[in-house]
Length: 215
Image: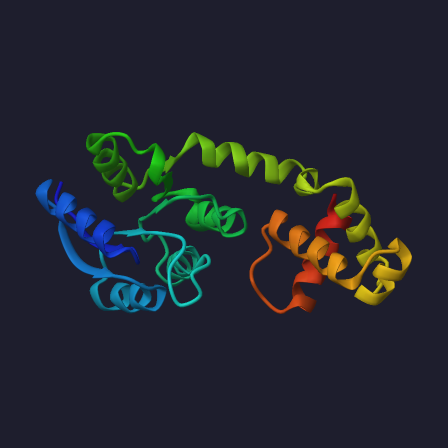
């Protein structure tokens, strides 16, 4: 089965390696891009059979690639998409795997792809409407669905509870008898551990409070 593919990967050597591999097994790479904006433009122009994308790409070098994949699957329902990444971006991974009824989608970790045959088989399975998810990805997402607060330390839970009460950073520092710098560090750790999307701090505080209330 020959497919028209788009590859999105900001590391040049890896991108070229993927292109070469895919072409050797009989697929056509209609575009190879290095940033999230290029991915969106290429998909709109080429309407590929499948997209292979990394998570962390320019412009912000956070989860731009994954967010673009989610957006594209909303714009083009059923667009087969395979994420190939070094880590699990939990917040958007859930949205990606839930999109389109969970069909024609995959999420593999680069370090755990040990054979070319397994990778090419995953591509063909996703293109045919199947779902391929690395077991480590499943394990991490299951933990998130059970209780996202389990990853917080006792102090971080205390800080989050005080945020839910509406206290400012200065108020938190006074209540806990610590510096505002320490408060900022705790809050940053909370945002990271809850996998809240990069946004304004106020928006992330609201999302953190909602996570606290749900738990």
